[in-house]
Length: 503
Image (cartoon, rainbow, N blue to C red; front, side, top):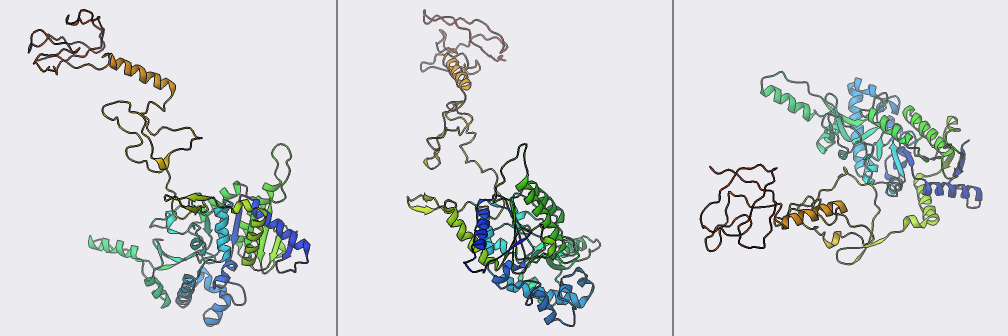
C-alpha cells in the first residue's frame, strides 16, 4: 500500500517528519540505488514538461492548431508521413533545442551526480532528451565518449555508462538511411528552424566518391533529431535491455522515481521490474533467515501528482512536492545523520600547501585501463654489462608507504626476487668469478703490453706471436686442459670451453 507524504506539511506532524527522515537514512545507507527520472526534474531549469497545463503538449497545440489535433501527435512516428507535420516538427524541435542549450543542471541533477560520487548509484534511467545529466557530469548513453561509431552501431558498456537516455538526445541528429549519429551543429539547427531537413554529409561523401570512379550514385538520406518518438524503436534497445538485466541481477536495494507521471508503457514496465527486484533483494534469505534491514527495499515516488491505483502494490512511498526541495532535504538529513560521509581529507600539494581532496567519483570519458609504464623502469635492460642489475629505485614522490612491502620495479632485479632466485643468481656470480662460465674464445687472442699473446687463463705464451694449436670440440664435452707452468702452484681446472675451427 502506497503511503503519501506531503513535503509541505507543517512541522507539527511528527509522523510525516519521522518517515521522511527514515527515507533520508535509507538514501544515506543504501549502496545500489536506481534512479528513474522524467521531465519534472528539469522544470526548474526553464524546460517545460509534457503533460502539465503549461507543458509541451499544450504549447504545441497553441502554436499549431491547424496541424495537430493533440500535442502528442507531434511526437508520434507517423508525423513523417505528412510534409506539413514534418516541417512543423523540425521548427518546434529547433526552438526547444535553443532553450535547452541555455539551461543549466538543477539541484536534482547535482544530487544524482553526488550519489555517483559517493559510489551509491547503480544506474540512472531518464526519459529526458535535454542531456542535463551529462552537463552535471554523468556519462550518458548517447554521448560521444561512449564509443559510438559512424554507422550508428555503437555498443554500450555497462561499466562506463552511468545514465541511460531512454528517449534519445535532442543535441544529436541521425541519418534516416545510413543511421550515422552526429552532433547537432548550428548549421543543422538553422535548417531545422526553416522546416527543412539537412542532407546527410556521410551519404553525400560516399555518393560523390562513387561518381568520381564512374559508379552509380547512392541515395542521400536526411538528418533528423536523434530522439525516440511514440511507436518507434530505440536504436540501442538491445544494449539498454542487456544493461537493465545486469542491473537487476546485481540486486538493487532502493528505487527512486522522480518527475514522471508513469504514463509511457515502456517506462511502466521498467519501473515495475526494478521495484520487484528491490523488494525481492530486501526480503531474500540465503540458507538461514537473516535480519531484514529496515532501510533496505524502499520504492520512493517523488512527484507533485499522485500515481494511479495500479501502483498501490509497487510504490511504497509517494512524496508529494517539488523534487528539488526534496533532494535538498535529503542532503541536509544525510549530513546530519552520517557526517563522516561528508568529511574531506586534506592533502598536500607539490609545494607543501594543504588542499581539499575532491570526491573520487566516475568522470566523463573512457577509462584509461592500465597506465603506461615509464620508459627505463619496467623491464629495464642490463646496465654496464651486468646481466642482473640491482634494483632501480623509484622517485621520492612515488615511494611506497613504509608499512607496505616494497615491490620490484624490474623483473631483472635480484634483490626483490624470491629466495630461490637469489640463490641461483649467487651461484651464477660465483661461477663467473671462477672463470667457469665466461671465457675468451680462441678466435680473439688478447695481447699484452710487451706484445706477448695471452691464453684464455691470462698467462703469456713462451713464443710471442705464435698461435696455439686448437681443436674443434663440442660445447657439451668436458676435457682437461693443462695450464702452462707459469706458476707452479696453479691447480688443474675443468672449464667448459667452446672453440671455433681455424681455416
